[in-house]
Amino acid sequence: MDTRELTAPPSFPALYARSVLSRPSRRLDFPRTRVVLRDQRFDSGRLTEFCRLTGFPVRDEVPLPFPQVVAFGLQVDLMVREPFPFSVVGVLHVQQEFEQTRALHAGERFDLSVRAVGMLPHRRGATVELRTELTVAGERAPVWTGRSSYLARGVDWPGIPRDAARLDAPAGEGTVWRVPADLGRRYGAVSGDVNPVHVSPLTARAFGFRRAIAHGMWTASRALADLGGPALGAARYEVDFGSPLYLPSTVRHVARREADGWSSAVRSRDGEKVHLATRLRREVTAPRGR
Image (cartoon, rainbow, N blue to C red):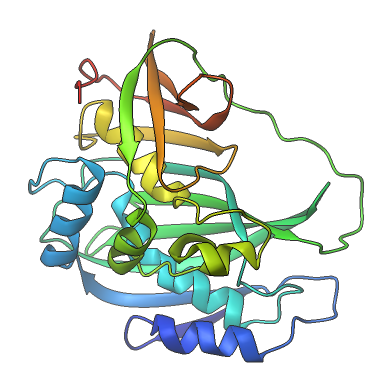
């Protein structure tokens, strides 16, 4: 596997401009390149804004989803600069998994790496799976690992599409969330994810959505914050993204205690649509009301 090292975090405007101008590869393959960014620290201002926007308390412990926010630029860099058979503009986040072996702390120095580990046919195109690893200075094994699955619609990938196993989505009354119309722009400013489907009704309609949709990562992070805040030790958090959460919306977060953690779902106000289902494995306290 080739390694391409970055000397600084990628520039999102430059990457998105490049993605608009470049053409997808015609090869039915994906690149075996690892993108690496070394000797980084968490930006305290960005971390604070992320916590305030998603509902985590501002503490020294880093919320379990936050390294994905930091690594997202590397993911975009990989998908834009390497010869993938799709354009990154308009891709949809369909599944996510985070796992950490211990709590991460805001002052720690770390290396990040991202690589593609596979592509699969999907009934609406193809999915690409990216693996992200965070290694803390002085430690050999990754402390934090992320697995991201993105859907590139319209890509004709060989093979028979198979539906991935889905997480159970609890039903019930739950906690009401009121999601504002400007959330996509606000979360995009923190995360750097300014995909057109999130930032404006006009640009979202160009990609087949009637209004702008919330970032899946915001929804997943807000759900985890409701399940007790930062992961203070070893933890695994799995997410299935479902129906688009249009902005603005009123939704319900329904949580169910399990023997080894929690299952939860973000549902439409009437409970009929599932926007997101999650599974958290660790010892946590009861969900906080909102």
